[in-house]
View 1 (cartoon, rainbow, N blue to C red):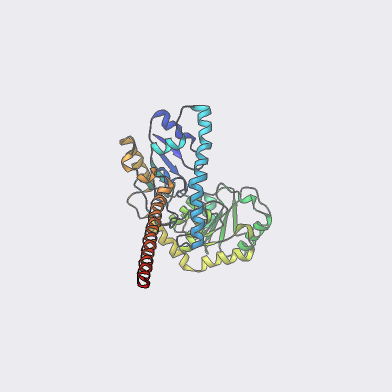
View 2 (view 1 turned 120 degrees about the vertical axis):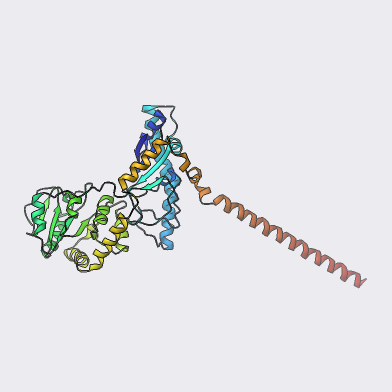
Length: 389
């Protein structure tokens, strides 16, 4: 068995050809536009949102147009180009006679597992071998370090966690943004645990603890945590949902916008623009979430929905991986949609046939009417001529 990561490269798929094994693909984010075609998972742009263009389920005409154009670009241009870029190093360094990456993935992918759950995004159809394992990274909370515990246990008004994850360094933010955050935090009654990757000496309010690293999963389980301020990455968003913690999201790129926007629509988060932060905007968003109990109740409702499953995400992933191993692949799960070209999926060939049929019918009816009209005119003229004679 070959297990690969689906993002923007698929070079490792060649090992499935080399060793004659099936492929299991893991998507660490929500479903990527190019992860669905591997097993024929429905991805119709009329109602399935592309999580990377910042829209939501109830799309307007404009949003559906953008969603459709993004789907077409991914299907017709970006996706094939990505395969071509992967083919070159494989054929140059590994095996010049190897099939194309597209052929290997199409013929050998037995299972796709995505780090998402319908309770967080949208409800959508899934084929049997497209499996959601959102939250697989979450383990039981461990005791937190003593300095965190002492700081958080004594927070009578609660604790706010601030972290921009592992990809984005909070220390890279502008000084004005940093000062806006510190100025807002200084006016709050809550204590703040702030992830910042460099040593900070000046300008830190007494209610703010700065650390270069946070055991975020464990801290979120603390009973005094009231709010998570984060960038909206998939892991942080899942951890917030799992623990029933409301969010103030500050998305920066990729699926982060849609992750936060979805929680905003579900009433469990507020959105901030990290590039245009002011003290007043931070205070407005934070106090709105802290002072309105509906954010916490909505977050707890999402948490219950997220956890309500037949099996844990880890057990689900283990079962389906072993299923592929037991059956040496899973062609019985394969949907025919995986083998359809995009124009057949959109029924463009059928629409073309129907349009041609309609045009042929219109032309035929027009010809018949025209012939009948001329026949009537001819008969009328002959009748009039015979009367004159």
